[in-house]
Image (cartoon, rainbow, N blue to C red):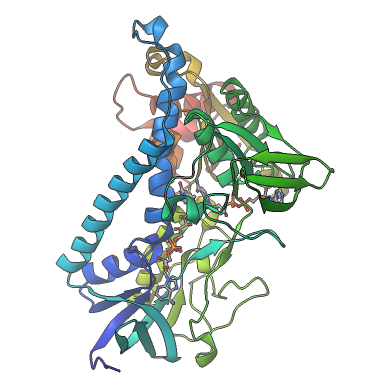
Length: 471
Ligand SMILES: Cc1cc2nc3c(=O)[nH]c(=O)nc-3n(C[C@H](O)[C@H](O)[C@H](O)COP(=O)(O)OP(=O)(O)OC[C@H]3O[C@@H](n4cnc5c(N)ncnc54)[C@H](O)[C@@H]3O)c2cc1C
Ligand SMILES: NC(=O)c1ccc[n+]([C@@H]2O[C@H](COP(=O)([O-])OP(=O)(O)OC[C@H]3O[C@@H](n4cnc5c(N)ncnc54)[C@H](O)[C@@H]3O)[C@@H](O)[C@H]2O)c1
């Protein structure tokens, strides 16, 4: 056993978007920081989540768009996908990003420990790897250990055949054309489209309508369904997977309605659970809830005042965007005292499928529940000169504002580049003046982002909010 005598200001356990960002922010503010990672640096998001998924989504979009290339004068026919090459491409991208992440940590003087972190007592964490144990002490500790895939009861993963999303990227590309995707949540909705575009024959099994548990409006989900259908992807809703067995030819899946589906491989996307295995929380006062999430206040402080927890391990909002927002908040609360509360509704959420869907803030039902009167500002991409030139006019911007004050209540951006455009709503200095800020902005023309301004204008022209927003 070796032992580090170094005392750190901050120790971060886990190097996903939450942990990585927290370490960087604390170092930028002059703190002495250490970070521990048990697996691959960068966590789920970089190695087996957002980053490789976006790489594939971009390829899927190009293939989908290529159906309309001929009428633009781009000849050669529609494009086709190759999953093996696509797998290699994301792998190279992830490797390059990972190297630059590790390099940045080094340049900031953040001490990196590779191994499994386990609390020995509330201020000491042991890092264990094949070479022995190091003990690290710190005044403050952030738990950022993320989550892992959940398999439905009785279903066991099997390499190349019965996969969860981690296996998709941690193992070689699965082979075979007949693919089943199980789950109508975010991963199911994204990968059913991606696999279909990469040349697979996708059967998509969902036990409820896709994304039905999210806050997207019926209009947004309707636009997504239309785009999925046009791409040849349709869910078989009200189907529940009961069992999956590996056969000589692939997998055999039994559904609750009595049907059997044969395929080469299946991706199971049935949710994720917080990861706190062997973390030694029993040696601290940190508590978990009934689902295993680490309990933390709105300041992200646990029952041990010097231990904070962020990202997926706190839940219930399992996005990199939330983990990044949490990191900013936890570091600020540690350094400046508890001044900032978690505000998940205002962290943008995105889905990358046959359409990009982005949203933040309240939806109509939530606004009405709060007894607010929402005015709806709307602009469709079908009249955007940029979108027309791109031949990509699906989708819209929809903004909710308070009828009296013009305060921003929430918004949706549906369509290509939603993940970029949504920042105009997310970065406004405050919600009272957000739409004024948009109204007074300077824009590049023609651009898809201008539809945010056009939707804001309809709040004035149709709802009489001209003075509040443009005055
Ligand atoms: C397929 C897929 C696609 C996704 N796409 C998106 C997207 O487009 N946009 C988005 O916002 N979100 C996306 N997500 C969600 C996003 O990846 C997660 O919400 C995010 O990674 C959570 O960040 P985190 O820092 O909390 O934890 P993680 O990224 O899970 O990182 C936690 C890290 O802690 C390490 N760790 C755990 N225990 C220990 C220990 N005891 N000692 C040392 N290290 C430990 C783990 O090895 C891991 O590297 C996606 C997820 C998946 C699965
Ligand atoms: N773009 C993003 O931000 C992004 C992308 C991917 C994943 N994520 C996060 O990762 C997490 C995990 O994603 P996910 O899609 O696995 O989870 P999810 O919780 O979003 O959806 C799981 C789905 O699986 C269904 N399901 C469960 N058991 C089933 C069964 N036996 N048969 C059929 N369907 C079944 C559920 O009804 C649900 O629709 C989510 O919380 C999500 O926020 C985010």
